[in-house]
Length: 112
Length: 114
Image (tube, rainbow over all chains, first blue to last red; front, side, top):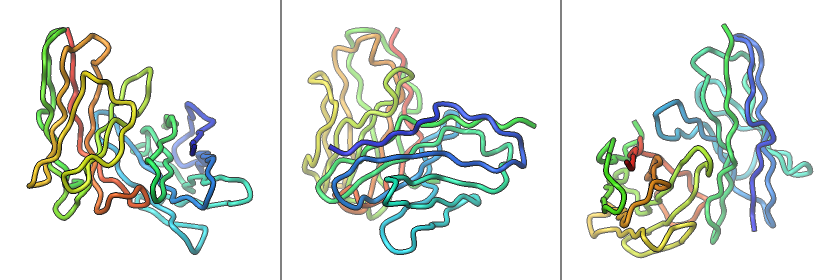
C-alpha cells in the first residue's frame, strides 16, 4: 500500500530564510504528488502538483517542489519565507485506482 | 475560495446525539471526499462518492454514513456521538473519481461533543 512520510513534525525558520520541507513516499508506480497548505482554522489549499514531465514544478505563493524518483522524494522549497507562510503543510500521493493518502503534516513556524 | 461549501461551520452537541454535515462541491466536480482531522489522528480519509455512488472507503466508523445526491451535494451523518468524535470534518471535491486529480477542500465543520 502506498504511504507518505514527512520526517519533520515541526520546523522553525526566520523570515527571509530559505525553506525545504521533506516528503517521502512509498508507491509501486509513478505516483501523482501534491502539496497542500493549511492555515489555522482553514481548509487545505493546493500549492502544487506533479503528474509527469519536468521534475521541478512551480506552485502558488512562490513555492516549488522537485520530484526525485531515485529518492522517492517530493520536497517542497521556497527561497525566502514570509511570516504569512506559517501554517501546516501536507504532502499527498494518489493514482488511478488508489485512495488519496496524506502525510502527517509539517508545522512551519516563522520567526520575525 | 475553493468553491467547496460546507455547512454548518460549527456544531456543538452532546454524546449519543446524531448530526448531519453538508457539503456542496465545486461546480463541475463529480467526486466528493470526506475527511476527519483531529489532533491525535491527523487527517483521516473517511469515504468518497463519485457521481452518486460510493467509490472508496477509508477509516469510517459504522456509526457514520454518507451519501451523495443527484445534484452532487453530499451529507455525512454521524450518530451515537462519542466524545472522541470531536474533530474537524472536511469535505473535498475533484473533477473525476480517481486520486490522480487534485482535491479542493472546504473550510470544514468543527464538531464539538460535550
